Amino acid sequence: MNKLIALEGFSADSVALPMGAAPGLVLAPSLHTEIRPLAACADIRAAWADLASRALEPNPFFEPEFALAAAQHLVAFRRVDVILVWQGASTAAQRRLVGLLPCFPRRGLFVAERLTGLSDLRILNGAPLLDRRLGEAALEAILTARHGRNLAQGGLVLREIDLAGPAATALLKLSGKLGLGVSQRHSTLPPARAADTTEIAALQQALARQGKVRLVEAASRIQIRDAVELVLALEASGPRARAGAAVLQDTREAGFVRVMTRSFARNGQCRIGLLMLDERPIAGAIVLGRAPHGWLYLSAQDEAYAPFEPERLLLARMRKEAPARPILQRGGAGSDGAAMGELDLAPAATRTPKHLAARARDALRRGGFRLRRAGAAG
Image (cartoon, rainbow, N blue to C red):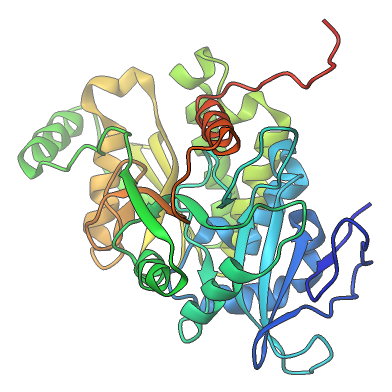
């Protein structure tokens, strides 16, 4: 059963509050924190979307269009918790959401010593949503609130975050005030291939000998719906399908992508580009996010034209068509040219067995290995 944990002198060991009863922990004259399962956040969608529209660092992957669709369709997101920071009491008519961080709950014997922001291969940016005026106060609320038994305390780990972005900058500033040590680790992913104008022009000329080449971008919601299916079909005919990893090979994944893109299309945050050769789509890309930045979520090409690199050509054409809307990629640079990576805020390091076990567990989780539960059959 979905439950809320309200934070004001209550222990999560003894009190589980029903949905809607959220007195909250008062961390400033008007800031309160609340913890909910991600799947139980549909009723705050309007407040959540409002926060996203005034976020210090826009992040489509933590917006309701993405996160609620993931919780609905993807098993991995169903046990995610969300820390909410509210301005104003729960009974106030004008209370506003000023901070939101999806995070991993503590599970099993090997538990994290620090609060860990949600990370997943589908999530290309791990920055929390923070009100642009109250971002630092909201972060302090998240870091200093008592989270109960389900969430770790004493620091924060955020993965795939712009290390020079506004959220990271606010965290670094706050770390000194709270006495937290800071470590940064740059992404180990290979950098996205830069667009060489000479190479792009040569590829364009070579492909033009095969027929008329043009860029088509879906405009209406119906066009976006249909264009998504074309991109998924292209992906399903390529190497990802041969590896069993194409979206259309998993009904849950396909349902998530369809619902998520249609939800983003309603507020203009889904950009779909198709590279056409005569009347045939030979490459497609799905870009998510509000202006000025967008994130490349999925792209694919017709393998019959692989020597012409139509996927690379498509992204170059889309960037040229809208130079004021950069398309960010996994492994590429952040919004201001800084590499993406992991930000770890922690109290003074210790070498107790408990801390060492937690670090080992985190390393195993990142490597995709799961320890068997004690007492499991075998």
